[in-house]
Amino acid sequence: MENLILKRVTHTDVEFLYELLKQRKNYENISHTKIPTFKQHVKFINSIPYSKWYVILCDSEKIGSIYLSKQNEIGIHIKNNFDNFELKKEAIKILMEKNPRHTYFANVSMKNKNLMKFFESLKFTKLQITYEFNTLFNSQNKSKK
Image (cartoon, rainbow, N blue to C red; front, top):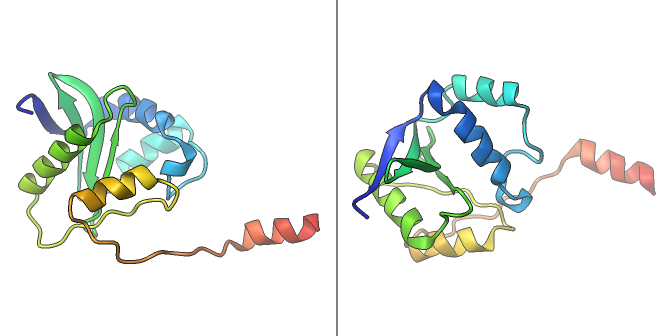
């Protein structure tokens, strides 16, 4: 895919990234359960949350985003109408070439079976399953009984 490039995220990408975020299905998210407000989204972007964050361009069209966290975790999301295995694979290859590391990680929701299979096909190894105990959620469920 010679027409695929990664461009560093800038303030001009805020609206695109918000629209991309709104396309995500609930089972794809790990870090949040509801879509943040646009203002919260802008604040998040301005906080420079990742080591490297790129917009994925295909034939000069913004089609997704990919990041490398400060802990070498890869996150990727492609617009629904462009999402395919080869495109994701190429974007990750370019990310790794631009940002060489010995080890990369990918945190994937247990409900996102397709993304798990995708990373396994790239020879990523499953390391752990993480559990959460949420006192707010559990106290609300107790009061319903």
